[in-house]
Amino acid sequence: MASISNDQALRQTLNGLPETEQRILAARFAQSVAEWNREERILRAIETALRADASPSELADAYRAAKSYATKTYTDCGKDTNWLAQADHFVAAAIAAALSPESHAQPQSKAWKAAVQARMAVNCAMMEDEAEDLANEAERQYAVVNDYLAAPSA
Image 1 (tube, rainbow, N blue to C red):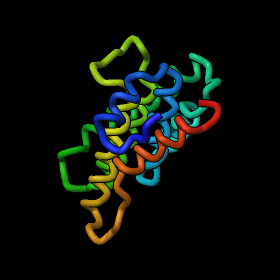
Image 2: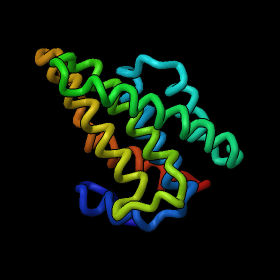
Image 3: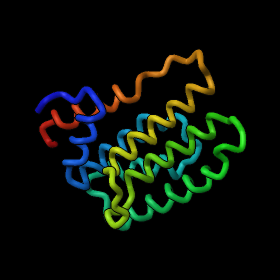
Image 4: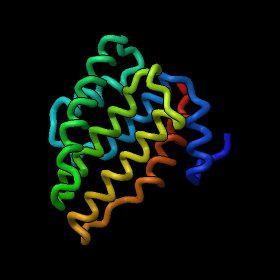
């Protein structure tokens, strides 16, 4: 398989993956920005989403927790310029996207939606501390998917 090095290839690859693999990769995208998370339930949701053997009820519970927190933190976005609070929101939105039920089908894959939300978290964190040198999240996502696809179990 060719190496992913741009968003078009990333999106196409993610769209072609089975549901469980999309969820796991989406959770890895959320995990990569979890340092800006302020809520323990989000960390547990990420852990659940990363497990290939998570039961449907565990996934549903994790989704409800992540969606609830993302909704709660959304109301704070735009009220002020607390960039870290907004980064926290996008971490929650990323894992909520990863855990979204198949019945909530969107034009984009859940993994792509999680990737974009994770990038938004990084952008907000960069606004808080312009001196901080953060890794390019898109490049990190390409590497995550390339590593995942190269692994023997994928």
